[in-house]
Image (cartoon, rainbow, N blue to C red; front, side):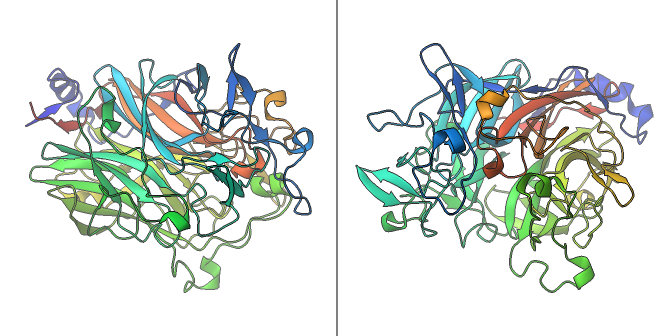
Length: 527
């Protein structure tokens, strides 16, 4: 059977606001609600500040003329205390800034938020971590870790590229070998329930598999550790090609029928079928056949990535399509088509939406759906789409899967909800974004300059927020009839290698909405 997550009282809200159908959403920032999330316990974090356990893992990439070990005073220690003196991976002993976590999947379970997070220390590990929050995403309590990639320790904690790992006391090529995993494991977790069975879906990042394989599927089991109960500790037989990488562990299944799937944005139950909205990312041939005026050039001189890296970022040729598919069993999918109105695969406009790569959906009271999304364009040259968080709605009430094909953007690049740092084209001058974001803050970073040293900001006014360089994957949760909570991911700089002491962070903020504008999702139960 199906029921409303918040109970039958929500039906009265639906009737009360029916007269405002198609009035359009009006979003407002809930003052002081933006915070950088912390997590209690769980695996190693970049920073710990306990009395007995204290470290700051930070770093910048050394000049190519040097070889490890590197001088930690000049270049930092990116894997500080990742492993103990006895060669065991360490844990987070208290409450620490939630790094390196990103790409959250968040859902409400009663009065508690449950999150599945992509835990990804650069070039070392990728795993799925489950945690719960009782304060709307500001603080998370660790509940479990599964489907990890790497059981090994870095050979040299000062090496930001993790070129070698310690395999039973033997120095073994890792980051220095493209055949091995680095941090390319299972990511972009999404949970879907179909006919009373819950499954978790992941992207397989392994070279030759990413964005071409079907999504990896595991059944979920009930247990006190929430969604990860009973899942394998490791998602691959080994992170080393010599051990079988990229072979998946034996219980892993796969979807069928999805086209170049990268991530699922949301699902809508429709009787015997469930429709999913997902990111389809084509890497080959990508845009190689596009006319020259529809291909991104290198990033302009005023782009943040240029300011940080002191050089432009090369063109990105990936092509993203938001697609709709249906399933009646949670494994086999049938394509419905490509959604329109969300992104333009051919735009080179620096205020356009070329790549939309993450997000979530909420049900609107009149039967339509809203989407909170992360997106970007040629200003970043990265198809993950991390320049800003925006919002879109379906054109019509969703009565069938076909109604999910037509959308229109409400909050786009130039009127974003949240954005990376503003940059200015001096030729105009023209700021990007044109207007201040709805959530307009500065200095939102829990870390001090000493904690991220030797990183130095590129200039006054840049990288002051923990999301200054990247902001994406907004997970929208209906908090009450007037409030939506957004849990999202951010980086202080455009690439993790820019500032290895402040990357892959989780944050949250809240938005005010008209009473009753959004409705609780229908969720399947087996009671």
